[in-house]
Amino acid sequence: MMEKNAKIYVAGHRGMVGSAIVRELERQGYTNIITRTHKELDLCRQDDVERFFEEEKPEYVFLAAAKVGGIAANNDALADFMYDNMILEMNVIHSAWKNGCKKLEFLGSSCIYPRMAPQPMKESCLLTGELEKTNEAYALAKISGLKYCEFLNRQYGTDYISVMPTNLYGPNDNYHPRHSHVLPALIRRFHEAKEQCLPEVTCWGDGSPLREFLYVDDLADLCVFLMNNYSGNETVNAGCGKEITIKELTALVAEIIGYKGEIKWDTSMPNGTPRKLLDVSKAESLGWKYKTELPDGIRLSYEDFLNNPMRAER
Image (tube, rainbow, N blue to C red; front, top):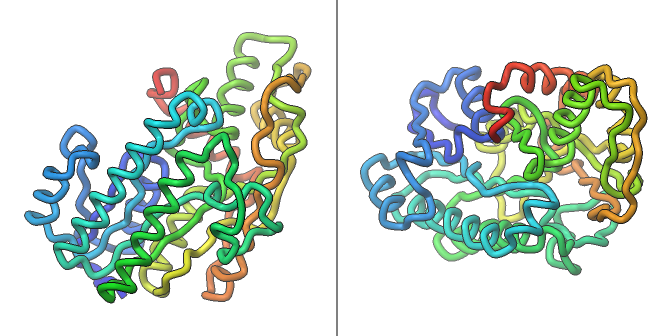
């Protein structure tokens, strides 16, 4: 168990996941949380990361920093997604190990699982089939980080764990019109369509893919829970165990935002993976369960979007 005054480093504290972990740690009474902005510490620069760990010697590390994006962003910048994620995670994990970090938690993504994995996807299906091409670069980087944690545990007896969340949403999400994930992208598009009184909104694909969504504060709760209650080489899935079609999701977002126009589908655009449901029985067997239902989470996310001064630039 982490002591309340233990030195805890949250990498990526300005992102959606990292900021939620900081909020959860503070809520639970942890008092010695250290963070660095990208300007203060570029995690892709090995010398700088090594110097930071030598000076600060954090006892616990939550590695939530990553270069992330939706289908369009991943397709546009395959090499960048692979390089940045591989470099930053290797730098942080290696420096944590070199400087005697007691425990590290690596945050991955459900996109690491094979494209056609049996549903719902168990942790054991990793590396049993081909990856989804639209985010292969990101998935390969995340698999490497997970495996590096496992190999350090095996070779050096470290206590490094990994968590694989499903699609996340919530406060501090990225609402960029091209580089965001599906749910924040829909929130922005329907909000703007409502403001501009547009008669219709066109969405990508045919709306048939099934997706699972987890509110980011629920993930943060799990991350702190696992840091205190789990050790092992196999990752832990983080999700709600429920799925919804993109078409149903789109209608739900439109309803919550109050957009009354027509929703059309551009079937010439890619759908992405047909189905991506996580088997969350492992997390549940450890004693954890999600709390926030999707309609409530979308309402909270829309409030955050309306109060987010950066939404136009991100």
